[in-house]
Each structure stands twice: as C-alpha cells, then as structure tokens.
Length: 167
Image (cartoon, rainbow, N blue to C red):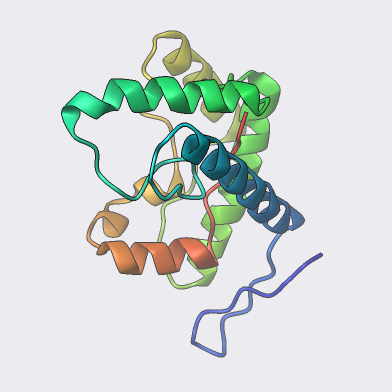
C-alpha cells in the first residue's frame, strides 16, 4: 500500500502514508458518484476530486446548483456539511503533519507546526464560533505557497496531498 512520491530530484525520498492511497480511492468514488448524480439532474459540469466544479456559474445558478448538489450528496449517503468532532480533528492534525513532512522533504522551509493540543483547542473553538477558516494551522497556509501559480500548486499537492474527508 505504500508508494513512493518523488519530485523530479532523485535525492528526494518520501514514502506516502497509507491514508494517501485510501483518500485517492475515496475521492475517486465520491467524484464519480457525484458526477453521475448531478448529470442526472441536468448539470453539465465537471466535478473535481474535492466535490467542487471546474466550470464557473452565473450568479442566478448558484442556489439551484447548491440545492441539487446537496440533494445528491444526501442521496449518496454523504453529509453536505461534514462535522468535525475531537477525534476527527486529531486525525486531521496527524495527516496535516504528514503533509508538512512531505513538503519539508520536497525542499520547503516551513515553521514548526502547532502542537496537537493547541491545534485541537483552536479548531474546536473556531468551529463553534462559525469561523472554520480562521486561524487554523495548515502547512499550505504558509506565505510561500500563495506565490505559486495554479499549475505549480496542483503539482505540489499531487506530491504532498492535503487531507480530505467526504463526510
């Protein structure tokens, strides 16, 4: 189940944790199922592995899209709004640490992460406040990644995936 994830440099030695391959398989199933369902509802869009769409919407289509997407997710057994309890947040943290280690292995100079307890407390507090995008630590939030163009970032994320949960 473990596979090497190599940058073009021959000296980079990174072994993916098993969750990465499992996540890819889950995302493929999620993407395929959601694609089929939204097509059945008349949408001609391309679903991304995260459940977004490649094509932009007109503002007057957004509400209809959201309604159909959430209906599809529900019919497929996914939560439209996944919940994050302490156990899931700890799992997310451990996977973010793996992602950070991959990024460092691939030559990115990143500061030390928050410790797990601080991360869990901050994440739970921010989610309770309804500010899930607030000051939650994430290795890809480092300023150096904001300078990358979309193609460079996608290539990097293929090497060092971000954790993802369907529901």
